[in-house]
Image 1 (cartoon, one colour):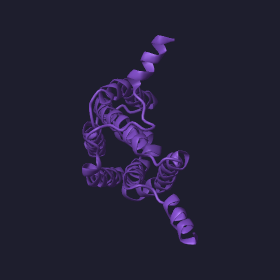
Image 2: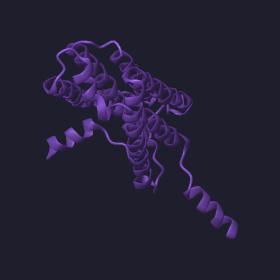
Image 3: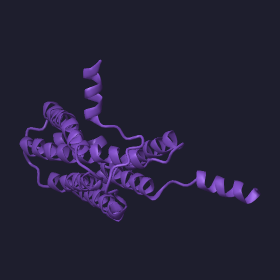
Length: 223
């Protein structure tokens, strides 16, 4: 009886491999971006020709608007594909595209360079976030939903918070280019971690807690 209770406690304290790697990948990937996100506006105003508050605002708008517009069609496309292989490769490809963007900032000189790079990042993040959410939700451990979603949010928050401080110090010490290189490297590492999950992706969907965007719109129409 006592051994059974111990085993039950051990099982309750463990998360499955897919959740662990998704959280760890998120931590590393977003910690990288945390190095530069808080001070990105300073980079634009100090290093981009004609860089000012307007350029910063347009750059932010390009990223957020394009990412928001793309996420629903990408999510709908993934919902309509059988199995998880498509979700997985969209996730990996999206993270990899976004991880290459910081290297582009090193060579950016004009506002349109920044807008283009922000657009590329938006495409990568729209793809990866749509796929990440589907895979994470589908593989979440039953009875640990709040814990595992909170674990990811906490990991990302702590990582970006700590790296934001480090990034500010690193820029004053070494300049922006080494920091951009570090962001790109951490993004690639976060992406490479996901490669170990390839053989764990399901050939058929077992939806579980997963929901389809198409189903949501169909239910709205029925109402």
